[in-house]
Every structure is written in C-alpha cells, then in structure tokens.
Image (cartoon, rainbow, N blue to C red; front, side):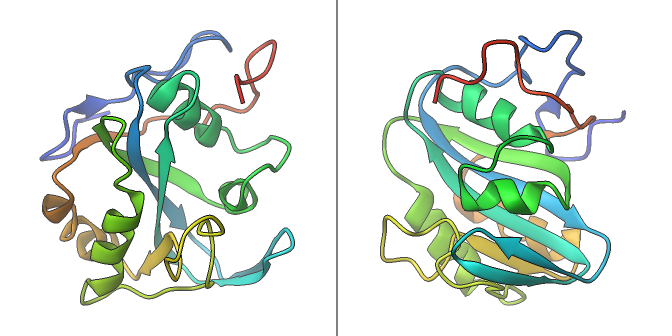
Length: 177
C-alpha cells in the first residue's frame, strides 16, 4: 500500500496474533478514522442506537494503561471481539482507515474532541459516545468524506499512520486490559 501524503507510514500487516500494529507501547492519545459504507442502525450497548451514515467517523480516546498506544490500537484494530467500550460496537461495522496519535501521559482526548466538534463539516451522531467519564458531548465525530476529516488533523498536532489490514482475532492470552 502506498503511504498517503502526510502520513508517517503504513501499519505493517500482522504476521502473528501476538504482534502489534507498529505503534509505541507508551501512553498517549489517539483518533481512529473509520469508514462506514452503508446506512444502518448500530446498537451501542446501553448507550442507544447509532444511526450510521456512509462516511468517516473519527473516534478519540486515550491509552494510558498497560501497553499504551500499541495495546489499545491493536485491540481497536480488531473487528471481532467481545464489546467492552462503545467503540467496539462501531468497529464491527466499519473499516479502519488510519490512526492519528500523540505520545504522552497528558490527557488530550477532550481537547481533540472539542477541536473535531468545532470543525466546519463535523457532526455528532450519538451523544456521550466514548465520553461517559468526561463532560464532552461525544468522542465520536462524523464527516461526510475523508477530505473533511483530514482538514482537521493539523490542528491536533499529531502523527498519522494509515491502516492496511483488518486483523480478525485477539492475540493469544487476550489484551492487557
């Protein structure tokens, strides 16, 4: 896969279930760029139903626990897993296009979410998504196309990696969280 302009690299294909997708095992903040290709109703646990439209969903989270960014993104890259977070329900219905991230123990997810929310072509599809532990309206933001989502990335001051595959199973022994 060719590396898109402005991206550091393409995540390497996992050869074994225990490998990560080339992100640092350090704490940090991340955004998943997810592509939805069809209109559908997606139940999101106890939160409600997401009325998914074709387009790009940007989900913002933090990875401050064991394994940091590497472990968290590796888990989110899987489509088939037991749902633990709101994003797990959406991941089953979308394709991972890219990951934006910044290293460090500072919590940037709310600041990133506010920047995405204020973007001209952003919409909140389901309130409180991924934001049950903060005061943000949502940590999930919808854009009709990739160009509109990409226009916001420079404001986040983050690194970017394009995804090239969709792992299908969790690693042996599970994830560290």
